[in-house]
Image 1 (cartoon, protein in one colour):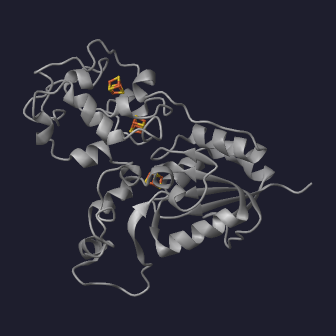
Image 2 (cartoon, protein in one colour):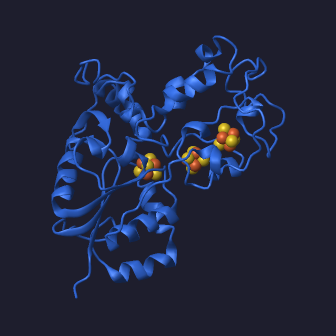
Image 3 (cartoon, helix red, strand yellow):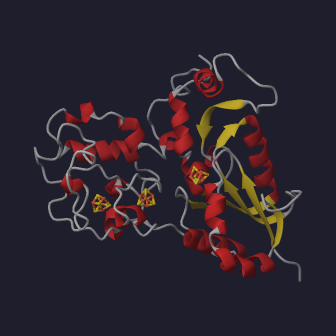
Length: 294
Ligand code: SF4
Ligand code: SF4
Ligand code: SF4
């Protein structure tokens, strides 16, 4: 009996999702023996035809990405969006706050355009804007275990669903007065983490005046950041696709912050939409009707 054909296609991202998969180490060996790996950064020449499962990592950022993605969809029975770039647009989606010209001038120097660069799309988009996605594993990068579970289910033709609760449900920090109105919530700035002498490792960050995106973020990573003493930055995106991650966070903060404090946040968009800007309703260059070059 022939083995299932597995492909792994990389679009615009940092390849950190791929590294997360490689982090499985020896656990990958039986999986690799059970499949024909027909396209991947691991194989010399891709054969993107007749695939049972195709993992797609990275967002659509160039015209070349669109071609590759359409080819992957056409060739695959089950297409899996791997990582927040593919599923939500990801951190690179903050590029949508700038025009293509601004982005290229900043990255390469004003007017500098080396030959051979793939043409940037007007904005960064999740792959679901172009193709049907059968399974989605957000996270930047997704947990290795979660990736393996989803991949195994896809290869076996089983359904696999993401958890639907928010990060606070799996975070072990004590929550006593979470989101209780307090004029003590912030010091001079909502970015209080550097200003506090001491952070209690057992207590919710929000209760200590430190922004944490946990309430508006999907659980599933084991709260790995808050366990490590760092607030959640929201990398798994909203717990429901219909939730506006940044908007709902502002809504929640507005209930507790002193009047007007939100206005003093240095980077409201980068905080609330760091990983989900392209799926948000937040105005972008594109949504203003521009083509990204003006
Ligand atoms: S989701 Fe994160 S880790 Fe994965 S490609 Fe995008 S930036 Fe890299
Ligand atoms: S806000 Fe952050 S620190 Fe507080 S319970 Fe939620 S995830 Fe944990
Ligand atoms: S705690 Fe938040 S930022 Fe950290 S890995 Fe989990 S979802 Fe991502």
